[in-house]
Amino acid sequence: KKGEFSIDEDQIKELENFAESLTQREDSSALVKKLADAVKGGVAFHHAGLTTDQRSKIEEKFKKGELYCIVATPTLAQGVNLPARRVVIRDVKRWNTSAGRNMPMPIMEIRQMLGRAGRPKYDQKGDAWIVSKNIDEELKFVEHFLLSEPEEIISKLANPNAHSAEEDPALLTHILSLIATSDMNDRNSLGRFFSKTFLSTHMEAEALENQIDRVIKWLFENEMIIKEGESDDVRKRIILDETTKSSEEDWDDEIPSWASSASNVDGVEINDKENKYSSEITPRKGPPIFGFKKASNYQVEEVEKPDSQSMVYSATPLGLRVSRLYLNPISGKIIREGLVNAMNILTGIDEQKQISPFSLLHLVTCTPDFIPLWPQKKDLEKIQDAIFGHERELLTNSVDLDDERRMKGVLVLQSWIEELSISDLEEEWNVQPGDLRSRVDLAEWLLYSTRTILMDDIELKNMDRDSHRVLFEAIDEIHRRVRYGCKSDLLALISLKGIGRVRAREMVNLLGVTNVNDIASLTENDKMKLSELRGWSMKLVNNTVKNALRVAKRVK
Image (cartoon, rainbow, N blue to C red):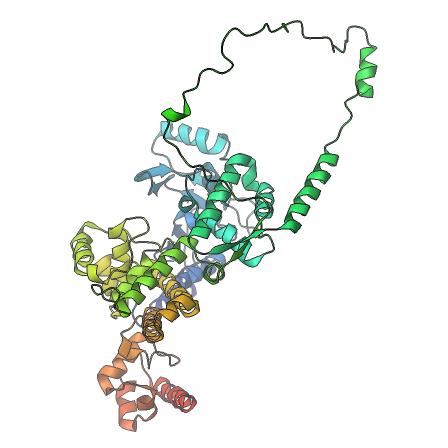
């Protein structure tokens, strides 16, 4: 009957199998267990707290019709490849960090969500609902979200409201990329390129030029580009372009034929007489200039002249590396300065500070490319203790001076590499698996970038080669620990296929192994003990030993 819904036994079995597959990981979180319970009833939730793999599985099951309802954040509803028979929007507000409160979602987003209703090939129509509390709210929603014009599209190529280069990371990134990887490496080419973009349609030409000049100045001062000098070839090209443009804009000032014809019509007159309101200006009686103060009344301010249009730029090794690593140039600056401070410590120039794994984690979390974590009240004491307790180990300051949020990121990553389980991390820091995974991935990328910048920096290497090597090895170790979420004693084991941090720790605790050679030489009794552990089998043990033998031979 209409309105009834039932699930047969085969569907229930499929849902139970799917729920079980979600919890098969070595260290499932409390969140995933809740998801598995929901899935058994044909319903799922979907948000950034889940891992990418979990979200993908849910989307796939929903597309196939094996899940009947998804409760999701707006991000999923914006997707164009996940239609539904019915869409229900429960809330039209979303938390806004800048405002510090819930704010109405853009009209465009709401309409995008509503547009998901109706599955191609399956439905003749779809229906979409916005839930309102009362009739007044309903009328307001209809007026605003359904009848009003959507917001204008704006360019993300730059920040039109920026007053400094550091307030415009997008333009910093794009200009460095153009100079480092394209032939648009002179001031005129850069200006012409941006004048033809969508950005130029809602930003004054002069303001855009000034912003480009500010960005170039910042990149030059932070040693990411150098000025090669003015180019005669560029100057000739500019003159040629101006000549071509001038000829294209030429027009005939004579009265056009249509105007001449129109003047023959009664009542139509082409008036080129003198303006009747013009008057003859009499000789002045006052001074030739007035309304200004004397220059001596003002403090002398030096106005910096922008680069000539024919100035040519090239990327430095640092700028080239930052661009190729897809780093925000501000992140590149922070990492480079942190590495200089680290080398000063290792070479004895700085006799007060120390370097630890905490130092390197803090360095990468202080960059704008790392997304900080919001601290809760219960976190603040631990965060403050860390800020003051590790002061000697800090290589830089937070990019946004938001020390608490950045420090929470450090402490979560530290808990991760100390092998705290995902469920314990969730309980201690209220960080869900997807949020943890995204921060781990960011930290891994930023540590890799840090290692690469150090490796390519001749100036830092020349400070002291031994210290340079020590720092490189330290960054490499912490990079691998973040990647695998383990202590340093597991790094020799964790690279084996099928062995994660949980299984590696079980082998160490049960059998006392320390490297692949130990695993390759396990006795039959050792194999039996290991196979009896939860999550192990004799087949897995034998495969692990085979992999260890293969790796051991390769190392020899």
